[in-house]
Amino acid sequence: MSKLESVDTLVIGSGPGGYVAALRSSQLGMKTAIVERKQLGGVCTHVGCIPSKALIAESHRYDWFRQFNQADAAATFKTAQDFKQGVVNKQAGGVHYLLKTAGVTILEGEASLVDEHTAMIQQTGQEQSISFKNLILATGSRPIELPAFPVGGRILSSTEALSLQEFPSSLIVIGGGYIGVELGQMYAKFGTKVTILEGGAQVLPGFEEELAAPVVKQLKADGIQIVTGAIAEKVEHNADSVTLHYSKNQERQQVTAEYVLVTIGRKPNTDGQLGLERIGMPVTNKGLVETDEQCRTVIPHIYAIGDITAGPALAHKASYEAKVAAEAIAGLTSKVDYKVIPLVVFSDPELSSVGVSETEAKTQAVPVVIGKSSFGINGRALALRETKGFVKIVADPTSGIVIGAQIVGVEASTLISELALAIEMGATVEDLAMTIHPHPTLGEVIMEAAENAVTKMKKQK
Image (tube, rainbow, N blue to C red; front, side):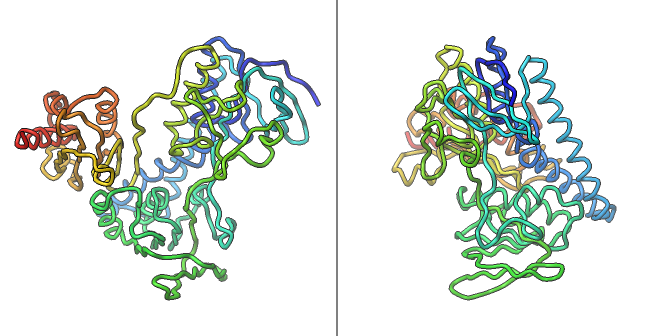
């Protein structure tokens, strides 16, 4: 076993949290090393955010050309996979370049904690130990597996679903959350017959029914069969397909397809060889590491960020926390102080939400004023043939300060940033309404929703 020299900061995991933490640490003058057991960029770059959005974009292009009888599904899907891999390779190469040019030492292998200041890196029979003054845990998460549906063969997690080289003629999706909807709709647009089984009362359970409704309508238009209140029970393997047995309203039913995709959530990577128990690092019953406002754990020189900490498992949250942790190690006063974290679903139409929803405000008995405007009359949306959906702004009825917003419609993923900034800045609906938005653009729908809220406020006075 060889021993590497000591570093100021060791980062375990190179996803959107890990590599950003390593970069910031190095920029602040600390000798930094990063450990990655698979590929630089982590899940997000290789089997998550980036490849899924590339394939989703390609499925939309195929669906568009299919309307004019100018697309071949098999050929297009192969081309889409090639395009996706090109995007992934470029992103991964970018991460490697940034880390190298920043002077970060890159270590390939599985990291195991020996004690509070030492880690062992294992790769292909070789072992290296490295000592550190500070540690940032950014090990991310993995798909949850159901005991009755172990991943393998014709049972897929999101990881395998993004790497199929031939598009399946049929697919069953267990779980109607954002991952199930995104990937299910992507395959449906390529021509796959998709069935989504959701245990709750609606797909996209984290969103208000009126927000999810335009998406559900489009899912059905794409040929997707949605079964809510469905409990998956067992799977039967056939020669070239699988039959899934489920219950709905206490009645046993079944559906057959080429593959089953399980998308019921993700599990934090705090178990296994990492060895948190070896150094006395406690985790919650959900496998999460508790941290303070500087991402510091109960062991003062060890920090944790991203999916292994409380809060939504989102790449942009991990990147934000990465900077806080690195700056805290450097002695800066940085702390987690965001007001809101935007949530996005890359469905068709797209969904996004930030801050308080109208339903949450009612549940908490918080008085609000609601401003709404539709994409249906927006010039840019009409030109794009994307008129589905609307913008909803939730504001304080007295001050007009924006406390939440939801969007369903074209480019909702991009538009939500303006509303997140409004909440962070303490802006009012009047501020949004009086901001000149270029014409014709989709952003005008936000301005008009704000104007609607201002009008309602004036009527209440």
